[in-house]
Amino acid sequence: MLLYIHADKRGNIVKQINVAIVGLSFGLEFVPIYLDHPNVAKLVVVDQNEKLLKVVQDRYNFPKEQCYTDIEKVLTDPGIDAVHLVTPPATHAPLSIKTLNAGKHCACTIPMGMSIDELYGVINARRTAKKRYMFMETTAYQREYLYVKELHDADKLGKIQYMTCAHYQDMEGWPSYWDGFPPLMHPTHAVAPCFLLLDKYPVKVYGRGSGKVREALTKQYGCPFSFEAAFVEMEDSDVTVEMERFLYGTARSYSECFRVYGQDMSFEWQQLLKEDPVLYKRTGNIQGRGGEITEERITIPDYASRLPKEIAKFTVSTVYNNENTHLSFKQGGGHGGSHPHLIHEFVTSIIEDRPPMPDDILGAYWTGVGICAHQSAMAGGKVIEVPAFKELA
Image 1 (spheres, rainbow, N blue to C red):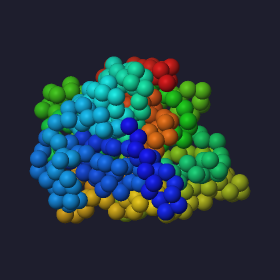
Image 2: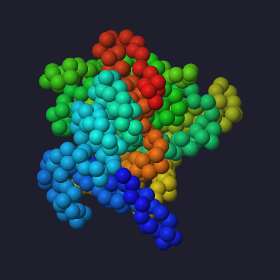
Image 3: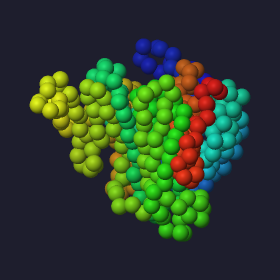
């Protein structure tokens, strides 16, 4: 249900919804943003770990009666409009389907599912329930993507010629359900900006595996590769997207990065976190053999101005710091200030009764292209067609 209240000084009616967060390990990061969002009337939190529930209660003077250890309490509560899932990967599709079937709007962290069948299952549940589903991919709202999109929208890049993206991450020490996870099984942190800039769907993928992980890491998922890379063919486009990822056994620090090569201007992600990205420009001048190319380090602006003032601070102010760490957030470089943008999009899409960005169709393509790339790598480089999820939009 939607609540209607007079909340502003001018007497304008403000629509609000009630939201539940399920999963408070990384999900703790989203609690203060929901609490401060002007269109959220009530927040409920769910986690099996009562210590994490106590952290929320103590830190935010949060009512104990709005803390649950069982998701069923939320799914059967007619007063809860939307559920944000921040749970382990294998639970994403089953819990998304369960949430939608319960008549709740659903937001879910990455990946959308662990198989093509699970992706179809989420889409079909959304269609049947007639509710909103949002795929909470951080890079769709990170500063770097928003900056490059502005360049592209202003036609400063010129024709895009090639795109490459990667997600480098060492996952030693993570929870055991990640042990041996196939590298490209969810490349969404890498591919989302590229696919969004092209505004195209992937149709075919050619993947290869490289290197080996230790034998103990092959038992859970059956993947022997330390590294996986793939080339993606896009629908109605002459642009190829290259993607790569590793999770174990490779000496390289964390990066969620993309590079865009245009006819007039190109963007390259920095190699080191302490550096700035590089922008290359073709001046049009010919210098003997070859055209003149300028290069400069650029400072990426923040985009807090796009948000309600109540949550704008969360593009730079976060739950996690040196004393209160979480590997996903610490290694991810703060996820580019994306979290308040994600929450604002989810909440407003429900209130405005429109599909969120990204929705389940985009989530299925971004997750599905990785599943297909891994299948291709395991088959020695067989070209795999990506399902046409758009037919179920």
